[in-house]
Length: 111
Length: 113
Image 1 (cartoon, one colour):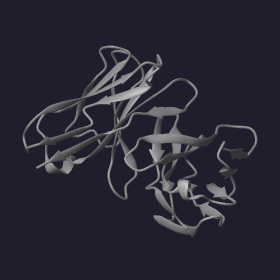
Image 2 (tube, chains in turn purple, blue; image 1 turned 90 degrees about the vertical axis):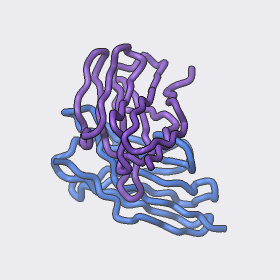
Image 3 (cartoon, each protein chain N blue to C red; image 1 turned 60 degrees about the horizontal axis):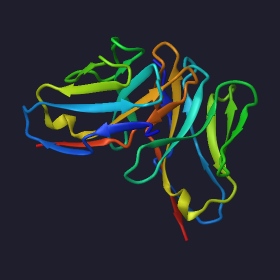
Image 4 (cartoon, rainbow over the protein chains, first blue to last red; image 1 turned 45 degrees about the vertical axis):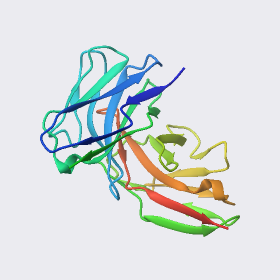
């Protein structure tokens, strides 16, 4: 039981490049989330999903897209990366218990 | 919009001393409250949570938090800290409308020998 895994662990992009971050969970959770963590700002919700095939915007969705084609996977896409998207990205999943389980994070540097 | 406020960005404390990390939430937020801990270069781990029932909740490693509705607070306490407690601690509240957490800005606990 691996819990929540994230790929890649670290990435460097040039401004304007695109990439996809992958989140996978093996706990059969319905709900999945993408957050970004920036110094002094805690974690902010980017997008979330309440089930396979559904997505919704969070607090800071601009510049990101997501997809939930399979229940166990939640993808976060950056179509045209900007330096302001330099951050640590965390994925999480939860069931009805309200407790969220977090992945180890992806560090993204946009030059 | 709901908000969660952690009043202290850093809390230095000596080993074996007591500590309190403060958290206040806005009155409009759901009363589901959480404390998460983040060790260096790791993801967040649930420390404890309040959903309903007893207002005092405890973790397995000696931390406790008390839900105080009148003061809209959920402060985290430990009577005697260890070096291994050095980490960043985040208070969070669940938004039942979105099932997503609203986080405070975090408090870095630095335990010194």
